[in-house]
Image (cartoon, rainbow, N blue to C red; front, side, top):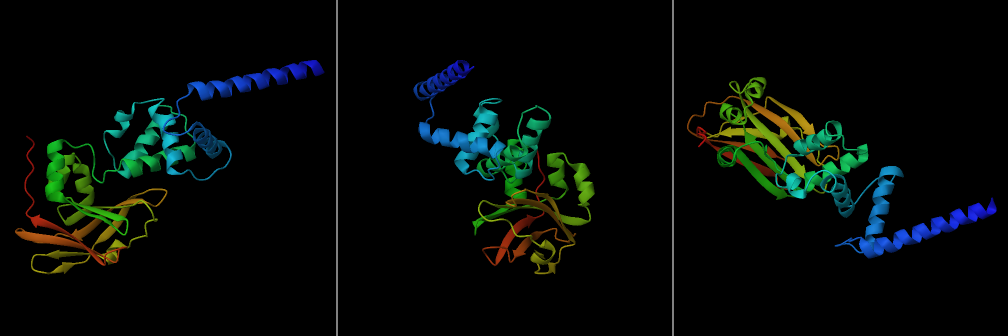
Length: 271
């Protein structure tokens, strides 16, 4: 029995040595060194099985590459089109629930956060090039990066919902009775504060008259509190010619942020 145990130990040791030698001779770990690679593998494994709670960006990228781009897709399939935070969450969930990709819950969260940070879009990505150009010229306004808080606002009259094919959403938001805005808040460093948009937002018309919001509804919030989407509504204003301006007050960074739209909005025509 003792001889059998010794033989098993010797065989296992030789197998381990051969594996290590083969790894150092055959496995290309660039741009990491082999020791860095082994450390990352150990930490990602501990993250999945041993209770490690956080991965750094290098480790999240390694997890993403090994779970997505090396097993399921080439990189360009995933990375050539950026998505909103909610869309990336839906993509990862679809990979798990529909395509059968085996990911632990914490792995799915880490991959989602990596994609949200590296390949982020603040506008829907299902539109044609002409529709996106129209959206960015007439409806989408941005305030980039003051105090690491990125704010995007899309004004959504009926013309917007005709473009995206969301007439049912137009009815749900009642765009014939309200001025409706989609508000996107994104940060890469700090967690987002809970904005009470009913108190922070003011809509102003060309005559300087101001309007308070009717309601604010959060439609999406990421688990790490770095991304939030919401719908902000005001009573319809009579403003056929001129402009209207949305003012957001007391967000981190600038005291006030201004988003302006020329009225009336042009009609979209697909070429």
